[in-house]
Structures are given as C-alpha cells and as structure tokens.
Length: 94
Image (cartoon, rainbow, N blue to C red):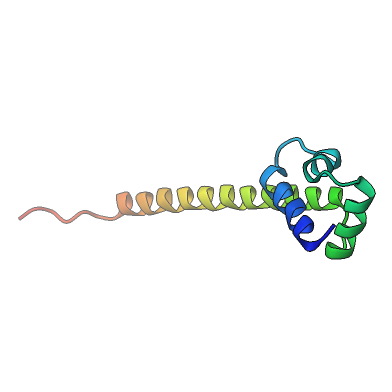
C-alpha cells in the first residue's frame, strides 16, 4: 500500500468515520488485504485503522461538545445583557 492508499484509507475514514464503519469497511474500500492496510497505516500514522476511527470519533464528539457549550454560553450572555438592559433606569421623555 503506497502513500496514495494511505491517503485513500484516511479519506474514507474521515468521510465515514462518524457512521457505523469498522476496519472491514476500510479494507473493503481499498481492496487490499487487511494485514497490508494495518501494517502500512501503523507505519504511516503510528496507529491502527481502528485507533484512527476512534480518534476521529472522539475528535468529532469534542468539536460537537465545544460547539454546544459555545452556543449555550452565547445564549447566557444574551439573557444577561437583556436582564441588565431591563434593570437599567430608562430615560423619561421630555
């Protein structure tokens, strides 16, 4: 498996990693023996196919969680700004 195949494996994992894929799906996509894919990817990344799928899923979950926290934080800031604005004395009309 060349670096082109490595990139093919990584591309497939990135495109489908959050779906219910496993090592057999990656191997089937590349049409190369599992041992060859595992060996070459381990040499290239220092991780197995399964490790890379799990790493990608954890990364996606973390990004999603951070986005959720950021959205929640922004909502709190808007509510706080609204509460401050409501509690400030309003100028009277002349």
